[in-house]
Amino acid sequence: MPIREIWKPALILRMSVGRGHFADEVNNPKQDKIMPQTVWIARHGNRLDFVNPEWFTMAERPYDPPLSEDGLIQAKELGVRLKSEKIAHIFSSPFLRAIQTANQVAEALDLPIKLEAGLSEWLNPYWMTEIPQTHPSEVLTQEYPRIEWSYTSRIVPQYPESEETVRERTGKTARRLVAEFSEDILLVGHGASVLGTAAGLVGGNPAVKASLCCLVKLVRYSDQWEMELNGDTSHLSESESQIRFN
Image 1 (spheres, rainbow, N blue to C red):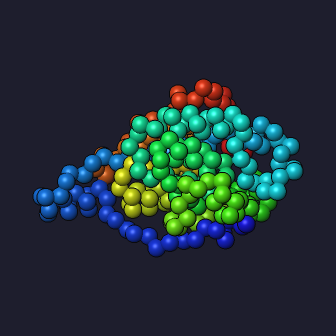
Image 2 (image 1 turned 180 degrees about the vertical axis):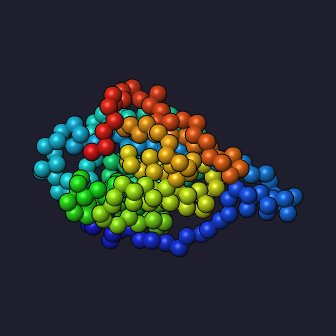
Image 3 (image 1 turned 135 degrees about the horizontal axis):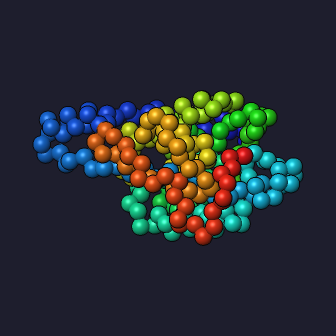
């Protein structure tokens, strides 16, 4: 199924943040003080085509590989790491490897998974010669019942994408999600979306270590975002020595 067929845009609820929220609080003394919000950003675990390159040539959906065996272990370790965190919403790229990673965390936290196309893989024409085919909803429904199909993506990418385009797309996605969801959230995506979502919130061009199944932790204090973890892999029994995106 082409990705554009299953990623439906939705009307975005726009909410003020930072100074706007603070002004409302001053005008309404009964309102609780603004609490810091935490955004966790994770990259998917190791993928099957990284371990077995021949899989790509035989696959029905070569641009949507599953996790490898060790990637599934990494995803389970990520779930253990985040089990005690106060995450209220899990957003995942609709690519299978990200869904499988998010599912392990969702099982640990007993939460649904919202598929957000804005977190998807970089639609790089040098990596993909066409719009990538992802797994159809009827397959995903059977395998991953925690997917919340009532949720619709806030951002829908268009093939092909440049490096600048994917950075803008993922940054915009992160900003829209924190504007709409004020509780702590988890974003599960890919190397490029880890970089873009982090930059979209903290600003500038932060040097993020986006290795497989890493964790980035961003905390908002008033209208400022601070990076408290940068590509942390201390929860993994094994991690990659060299970061690879494709």
